[in-house]
Image (cartoon, rainbow, N blue to C red):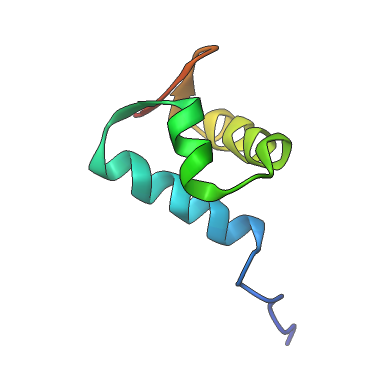
Length: 67
């Protein structure tokens, strides 16, 4: 048995929030999505890159689209 790490502020929470935002608006600018999340834009970009690699979203230089 392994205790799961803290959820609040975790990458898992941010992944979920990105997907939640995109469920409401299938396509948004990265700027708008990242503004909703806070000030850690480099961290959010890494998480968005992973979501894209896993096939959940598609990114352009300016936009993020839920697939």
